[in-house]
Length: 290
Image (cartoon, rainbow, N blue to C red):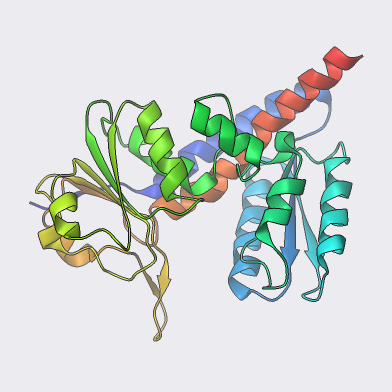
């Protein structure tokens, strides 16, 4: 058995077509397009690469996006001031801050400063709390991308056992909450979980998000399971692999995401899905306030 490929690039193209139409609908109504600000504290090459990818999507769907570069020596107060300025800018409907930040800048500063209504990556206490309570919220884009790829791939979640490898605040924890909303039974495993394979072999859907290259082997996967690989691990000789040993696991799984070309292409597109939603919400709030 060779697994069906859950092609994130194809799904991302479909989503971008939908977003392009939504941007046009918003522009027709309000005379301007949804706007995204990308705060980039210089010093991390990967963050610069991801920022360019986000700007490219904006051009493809007709949205507005701008880079807000800050020098590597930016102070916490300067970062806070930049975020407050964007919070009050009505042309900006969504704000993201590229991670990781330099060591001297606390990540909680970002979470506590971004206006929740513009926090389209779901890192603020309000959005995180609403997600936990099952209330409307913006969601971390990578976690949301996993749900998107499962739904577009027509993978049933209700009543299924989903095992999530990883407990980060940006993928593992929010993904578990999103899966619970879909009526899945969820198990979270992490670095202190003993006998890991005894859990992974029970999974109808296995999600790997630990940042360890090819750690998930074929013997850890139940035959026919769906395997979602969130990992992006750079190889010393160049190239990239996921957390799943793709070559062997695809012979066991029923469906699998490749790396690259799986979850990644959907993640950035989902930022704009949430940015457009934020723009509609903010426009409605301004109308009510008048």
